[in-house]
Image (cartoon, rainbow, N blue to C red; front, side, top):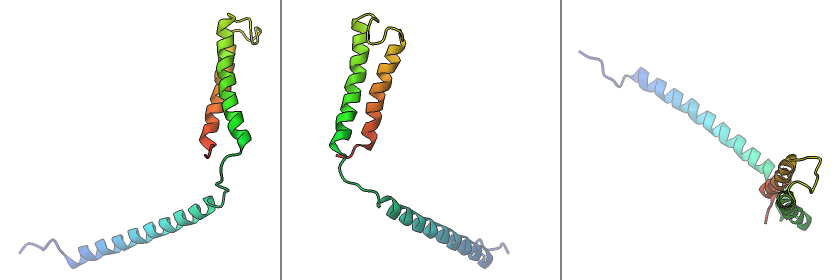
Length: 105
């Protein structure tokens, strides 16, 4: 006679492995809860005014740097840098955009 697919040994093993998985997932959930408590300890108030002004100023200065370079055909802002002025302008503007990642309204 063929053996039944629901052997007591097989189901017992399945229950044991399911119990282990549940224990692991509950431990992971506890760790996440602890980490969440740690993260919430940071001040979550609005960003200071100076941060907002600096962020927007960097964006505008970077854009103006590139515009001035093109309009003056490389005579300004720093003729020594040559075409590297474009990279400087983009770098300053990108700093401003990167600051938006930490901006809290």
